[in-house]
Length: 437
Image (cartoon, rainbow, N blue to C red; front, side, top):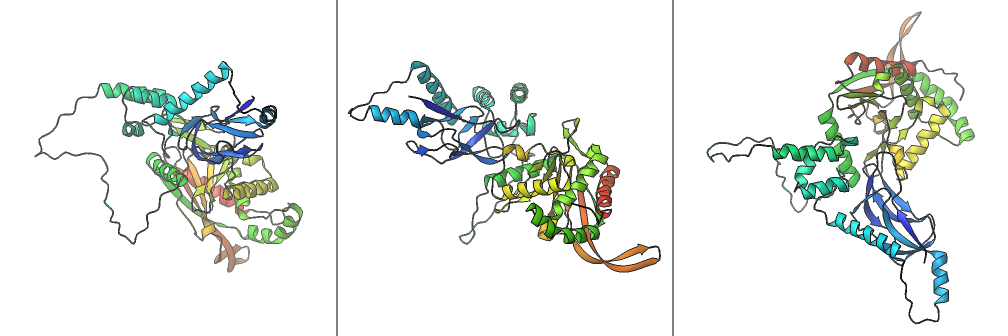
């Protein structure tokens, strides 16, 4: 009887494993092609694994919270056509005996054994950190505790602990001098952070952080501990952009079926500035600077639950304004409906966040590691301003906004950080009010 092995698909270059968070189908349930079978979570995004065939789920090889590798079989589906044929030929029989071939049986036994080993491992991947089966195996054999493993600084992509990291830790641990107990009269100074007790009474509500919330919290703290954050601020006059948008937005919506927001206009200016200042389109990994050829702009998008996600516009400098508008609207819409693919939230080289959406006039955003800069767009305000003309100065009503640029002072000095954000402002202020779109 033909069986289809549902495997964890490849979800991007840096995604090697995932955690099962919910089974959408149970053994015996009928499944249609392209129907979701299981929900999984990676360190990038939550998504679903779809069936490629019509059939019946006959076996689940993993449980909720188990960690699986890309390419590993998650479940077994009995193909619908084969199942119907078997049921028809055995309709008048009182007992049906099935015996899979030895080859398939051995393969399934191995898979089940691997699943049991992973699920019974004392070392677990957490919401903050994922560990490969090889790292877990070494940790178990060398009696490395979960606390020790969590303390290891990973040299892999996005801080992941590699085989080299854990072996180096074990080697250093074996030569550490024995700690001698001090007399009780002497105070012992430790660097361990003391937890402050919190009083909770019956009127307080305890809310468990979401998985995405935990990931964001870890990422933000790690960024502040890694980078030397510094900020530059500049005010830009966007009156020309405001008036131009008012003039073209209705006709554009009728023609393209898309709304023009300010975000794609600002992203276009950022992409131009990054071409002018390529040393802000870099990543810092250890003591090595990676200068990116492509400009991939991340745009922070707010979710309904209050969390943020950063979809990435790839090759943003190659898009015209219409293409940028469509890309921004598509990614923002699918971010809110939780339909982003893992590849669409990785590979960013610089990030932009629009704090003005919530009324903030400026902000000090945290850098999205391993990038070295992030730009916050403040709210556009109608303010009185001095306007310089050949006939003299006068006061007029202008639309203005603040641009807040956070950058990593380890590799970006104040001059470069300031020049970059000034270039963005200059592009915005030089907007052509007669521009065709």
